[in-house]
Image 1: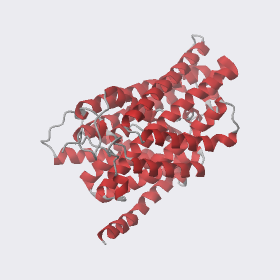
Image 2: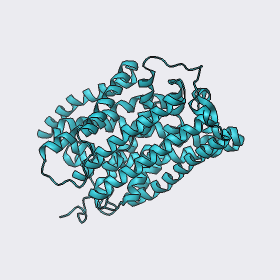
Image 3: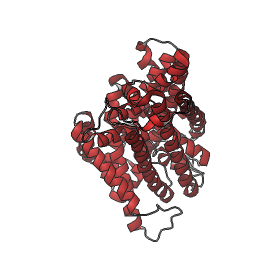
Image 4: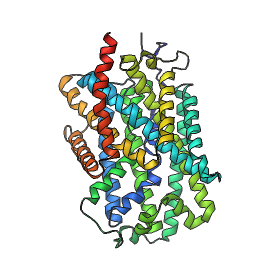
Length: 441
């Protein structure tokens, strides 16, 4: 029985446009509207700041090319979990799934949903005490829509992906208007924030966080039409669009606010709009950011639920988690569980804690996920692969070594919240053995 006709499996309904919008929606969330200020604090001028965004984009694009080959080789739902299970066995796959279920998917959604609620409340003049109730309501609404299947979720995502690109385009236009044709200040040195030792590496982490989320399409590969051709095209098209949008947005910040002004800003996007349009402009941007963050939450919940469903079907979680509703072909139990835990994290932490809590776990997952590409090339040397990473093994090695270096520096610099990811990964080992023993009994 084929995947397309089975009543207990997914249907392939997503095309190149849908896939590219999922990549854009999964990457562009809250980060580009907030983290450029953090990067500016850790750099001395616009030149290293822009270099970091270009470097982060090229590094992420390298990872995307690797994911394109992995997805074309194994076009089923589950993404990294699936690759780790086949290449390295059930324990590494379980540790990845354990980490993603407890940290990455719910943590990132909780962080971004909180940001969505913050900007939404500002846009409609609600008091701050409404932020967490609005965030929880958004999560419940997104889960509810995705219970109706991938087409309902994809339609919602496509709309919000276009809206978030519109918001970034508006930022770029406003920045250029404020520059009055004088772009020389973009690369000017900032005497207030001199370069310090290790600052460049420290600034790369928030850049990588802002570029994170490109893997969600692979999580949904079981619902992509003609995946051997569609996945590489959608991944590449979507990620190139993100890099261009991010670099242009940072140029707009620099010409509109200056490097020192960007570093001092708590909400650079809103501040940029405020300079030209006053309070109404800041409210317009708040609406744009709310749309962007809401769209990210939709993609993260949809992708995370597919990973949990695959784990349930494998017996790595309760079998009920692997259930796919026959009519909608949605992983309804996985969606409900992921949504519930996300609500718990939303009520628990603030944005800064949740960012640190998720970034290390996510990028470690990317390192080991892309590491499976070496195993596939060795084990299936004669297997037809419609897409292959160029310059193999150089590009995967560059990605793995660079990301491991950034993770190591981050854990040394902030061993608290960042190190918590490593602790939870390690705790997954005894949980795995207890679970396997319970299954055998």
